[in-house]
Length: 481
Image 1 (spheres, one colour):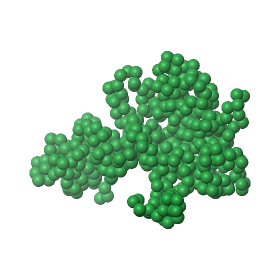
Image 2 (image 1 turned 120 degrees about the vertical axis):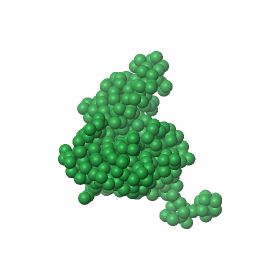
Image 3 (image 1 turned 135 degrees about the vertical axis):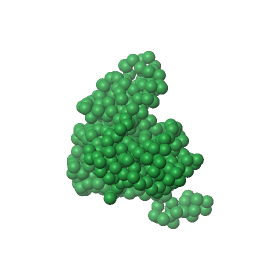
Image 4 (image 1 turned 180 degrees about the vertical axis):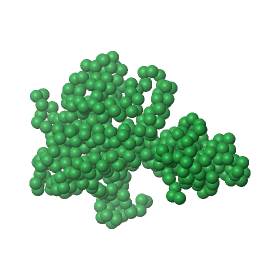
């Protein structure tokens, strides 16, 4: 008899059949009712034991966390809360779990405690639901790009370039830390290093993806990226995953169309395929919000927020128009914003982005044409506006509850303009010779965007800390597991 999953048994109408199942004990009540879970669903299946017919020594080993193998008859349940249950005929203990030391007892645990036990936290309902949703979102992303003619590209993890110009990168070296070989001027001689040059962990695969877009047409990356920012916040990780499509012959308007269609498609997929997990996380979030003062509670539930994105057309607004709205809005005039908007050129904060989405437009917003000096060197320069201000063809997509979700741009395809921008920012032409080559040999308009995967998982699960949406978070002073 082949073993079935809990998800399979709970979705079957066929009762009065013998079944076999393996899983972990969540609870064992009254020496009679085992709640068994195998990770296939948020729901447990109830296994009913006639304790008088089982050895006491076996019953004592049915503890929370133990792995067991149950064979029995699937019957309609007599009790509330489940449609079917298993009347146990045989029960084997596959792996014991000492109730004195097992950390994940059937009670409420803080997320901080569960982070310390991240190897076991997916045995809780919240984290099993979050990680199943993470898996579904990942699949939906690949599915979308595959169905829309994109080629999946693996960009290098070890790289010599700093795509963002941010400078906060993890060095990759085999040189001795205490006694590295030196040049005559006292600087480290990287020619003796493994790669013969200074290398780092990648902060983005975008520049390499651009090279492939300029021959394969439509490509995307989905891989790990690394930032050595010493940011101990609920929104920053040192290691996270990025989705970065790049498309040849596509301008900024096409880029916005692609990003909107992509976001709606991926979120529609989980609404359709992860109903039970979403409902559980929605209820969890509502209970959490009941503890907050009324002013801090969300206007929408988790599922309403996701549907809000799927069902509404995204409003496209220029940065200049957004600054006028923000400058004249009540929270700015009454000094309710932490960062007041006084003039054009300000870098928008999460509070401003959320005001535009949740209060002003009441739909997701795409801001475009940002000031050139607050955006990256590779974004295409627009003609100066009537007041002589320089903007670039950048766009950010803003979501309710979280602010910026996607950042992208039309890329600068003109060789001389790109060289000027690099010179102004002291970016070495020799280091990016291959990137400049794209503008020499068959250059064309092309665009793309980047999406931090964990940011998307946070939005889709309602989790408020980014450490809780990745299996093993890497943050300052923490590389456990």
